[in-house]
Image 1 (cartoon, one colour):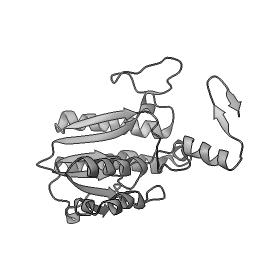
Image 2 (cartoon, one colour):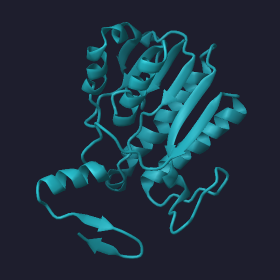
Image 3 (cartoon, one colour):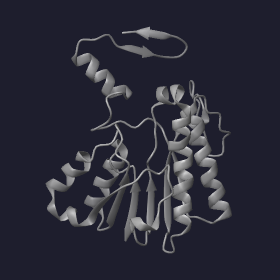
Image 4 (cartoon, one colour):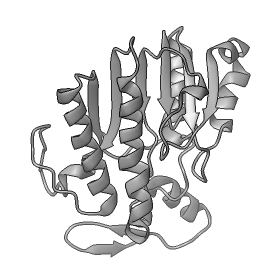
Amino acid sequence: MKVLVTGSAGFVGSHLVEHLLKNTDWEIIGLDRLDKFSNLKRVGEVIDANSKFKNRFNFVWWDLKSPIPKMLGLGDINKIFHLAASSHVDDSITDPLTYAYDNVISTVNLLNYAREQKKLDYIQLFSTDEVYGNALGDTSYKETDRYLPRNPYAAFKASADLISYSYYITYELPIIITNCTNIIGEKQDTRKFLPMLIKKILAGEKVYIHSYPGCKRA
């Protein structure tokens, strides 16, 4: 079994690679462009702890803003986990075009690559709950609810979801889309909410907590 994990040096991607190494015997190809949010040490620490993992993990540098070429020699892929994305909302507001490329074009390039795979039986695309918009009070969204993204990041993830669904219908690709809420954990970027709070509290800085309907200062 050979699987491709895009965004494998990112926060969530590296945890997924660790899980697959520890709980399967699959051969894993990690694909990442190694930007400022990526760090191969996340995976390296897992491999260093168990030398047997080294033979099952291969890293490939590639930026999915460009189509995946055959010269990369990835071989026949059985499963794809697509986590490569830009996910910082503030950055998407100041630089929306980059986020369009990183979340929409990259997904199209991946799906076109998937169409060429003869032994592919599973594709999982990691999206966000933000595609549905605000969830105030006891709001609970269903998979079939209307998309109402409220920032460029959410809009581009919604676009990637709809494109993926069209590939599922048109090309019968075995696609699963997950719309996760906020994910927290070890090795997360310090600009994300909880790591940022911890860093500020340890430094004795003021912390601003936003809540509906107003904002409170702590």
